[in-house]
Image (cartoon, rainbow over all chains, first blue to last red; front, side, top):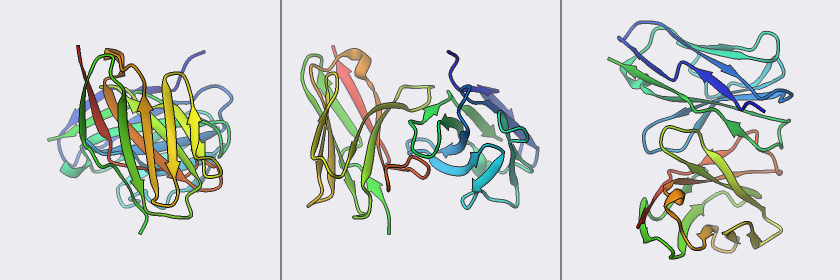
Length: 113
Length: 113
């Protein structure tokens, strides 16, 4: 069974440019998470979806970050415009419900120059 | 406030020795704890979890100990192998859920051959 798939794995952009990350969760997992991980730090939750509904986006900087999961399967996280401080790894994870084990993708590493 | 932290940012052990990675948490309401392993360039991977009604849980070569009195969590790895080299994170939540995990900073385990 395929795990959580993320793309791109690496992205280098100049500040003020837009960037988008894509995530395809494990089949059958209705809960999808986007996490931000800075170097040497633990992941921090940005947004959680239950099916197509964003049920927790309290940590998402809404002035420049947006996310969607239109059909309740794959999801896109967008940053526009990107800032130098956005350089980090963006992790996607999925689970079977709020109490299920989280399975993480390999992450998308963003470098903003 | 809520926080989960690790005492040792880096732990170096000899192959074959036992490893102990420690974690302190500050939220006494937390009742569910998970240890994750993260290898370079990959997402965190579930190792073992424990609920607050237990003080010890064993897996394959790993044991998690929970001391609620001093709000301390530890991960013991028996007969440490080179493949155990990674960053280890503890994470906490409430209600047995994984929907809002709070991750600690991480400990780098370096296994010397």
